[in-house]
Amino acid sequence: MEFENFFLNITFRKILEFKIGSLCNVANLKIHLTIFKSEIDLFEKLIMNYLKLIMMNELIVDDIDHIEIFVSDRMNAAKWYGDVFGLHPLAELDVWSENGPLFIGNDERTVKIALINGIKENDGSINRMAFRTSGKMFVDFLTHIDDLKLLLIDVPVSKDDVVDHDISFSIYFDDPDGNKLELTCYDHDEIKSKLLVNVK
Image (cartoon, rainbow, N blue to C red; front, side, top):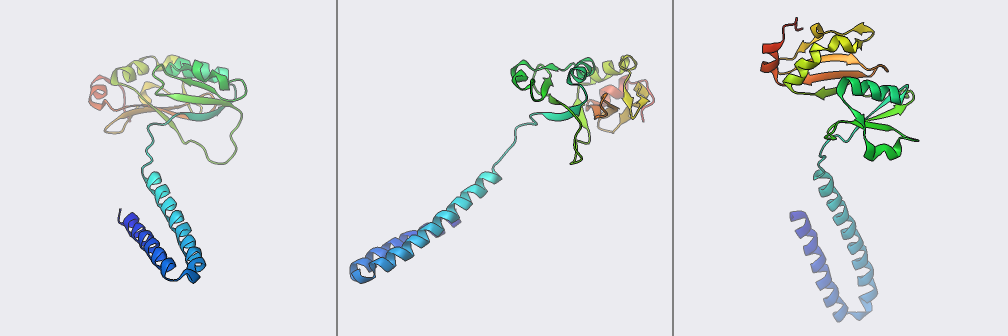
């Protein structure tokens, strides 16, 4: 606000000076106009930069829209993510699937993954995707984890591989294309009372 008031005061003062000067000395009218125009242009640029800065500072993101991962076969990957996480193709985003990514997600659309055929170039990559679930679902997942035949760097994953993070429990594994995944839950006390495994 002080910024705006400062430049507004300068502008109005220059307008007043311009009017008085032009009335008292008509011969200097062209000079006044040239100087005044340059100062107005500068004032406009400063205000625009100020408004851009305000807009940038107030930008707030609502959520992660989706995560893109590269896979060798989109349909096989969609089936795997369906079997393990219950995700399914999203009909409203199917318009992109012919020549672009195949989007899969949950019913609530709080999880969306874009499956892209191909191999990612060496320009950085997602380190891991972590899916959060409830205590009950986490324990249920562990009861049939052997049937899923999950691997972590080609090593079979079992319920004994659960990791206790003190405030959460997690288990780590790969998808068939080697993307790093995590299933995590923050219902720590509930899970701890139900787990009869060797927690790491």
